[in-house]
Length: 87
Image (cartoon, rainbow, N blue to C red; front, side, top):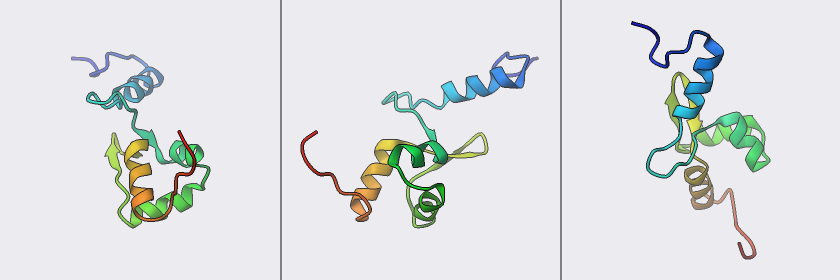
């Protein structure tokens, strides 16, 4: 029996894992903290502090990831983010 993703190389397996982290219900991707920090324009360390305060994340395949919508909602609720203007 081969590897679950059927990929002979670890590179293809990484691509499979990246694709597999899409949330089936919403289609929203699970982002690594580093990408989430880049999207928000903050440092990885700042975001790690928020995780220690209870920001929602999940560990998937040994890596901590988060959903942008959940993170933004949590940051707003805890006073770290404020939306201004119209969308």
